[in-house]
Amino acid sequence: MTPTGPLNIAVIVGSVRDRRFGPTVAAWFAGEAARRPALRLDVVDLAETALPEVLPADGAGTSEAPEPVRRLGERLDRADAFVVVTPEYNRSFPASLKTAIDWYVDEWQAKPVGFVSYGGVSGGLRAVEHLRQVFAELHAVTVRNTVSFHSCRDRFDDRGRPIDAAGCRAAAESLLDQLTWWARALRHARAERPYAA
Image (tube, rainbow, N blue to C red):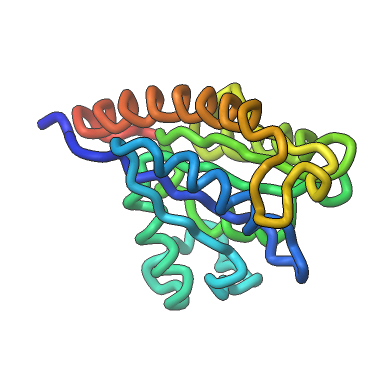
């Protein structure tokens, strides 16, 4: 049976650093995505998940995992697509995000991933390039278009809104168009035939 109804989109705030800018960026993007009635959003802030940093032995699975891992796993499993909001730390993405990715396998498979990045001169795009490789290994599909904020703290006003509202909205719309196309196509494909990794 072909699934219907809103697409479930998990927006993942990847940084857990003190005085991080991620929640500002994520709140803006979630607001843009919420303008689409065909999307149901779940903002996942990794700073609130309490995921353990020590992972189980290879192949152990998450059935006996700690409660925070099981709770987040249920949220990721429900998602039809993901948007990762990431800064760039030392030319890559945060360790907190890698830990969250590595706890799970099946939850990512055959689902699309979009990126909203922020940082200094590169706008977090080097972090995104690394993440594309990681998600490809997990059989996820990354969408081409991104939203990127260079010198991010200069790009938002004191109310947490982008100064270039029209340009940023256009970038978000482009990302969401691609993400929802893939999310719907892959949701139908998973319903017809289980994905074989």
